Image 1: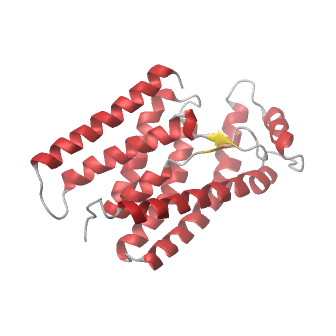
Image 2: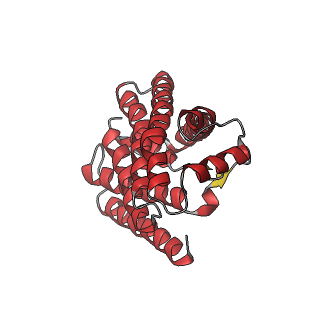
Length: 231
């Protein structure tokens, strides 16, 4: 990402948050507000976009293929989903995707895959927590989200992402992808299920575990300052 793109993303976040601030200042109402939900969704979605797109918040690990990077953009979506419900969670993911689309290098396919996986990761927890607002609800939601996202990430990579990159992206066929994988994990035999089980599964398990721990810690702190709907 170049400097202008970075400045643009930050400007979007500041604009959305400033708009939300003005609204709340002029309309200090209690209880649920659709306008408050929309403003919060936009702010947290823009924050997700920064965590997704800005290089300083993404990093690779030496024992995984170099094109797999850790990013923590689901954390704001989890928080807004817990605070304002499942629609807000999906809305924040959608905002992140829309903000990221002009910067895409994958013809939008990478962003589509990320939208699907992020939604499958965040949405179950938001739905379960909406009906069971306690630590048990958080634990059940996190467990369901983790399993669903791990399975979906393998299936999506095998049948959508890898075929797209190897057939459409110039200079990135299956042989090159396999060579990149084997630099970090020599035991990977192909870019199908071998790659999914030995690279995608453990990588996402590690990433998701970190995201869930950070989400729990952030939620425990922020819930005192966010006006949660329905409470």
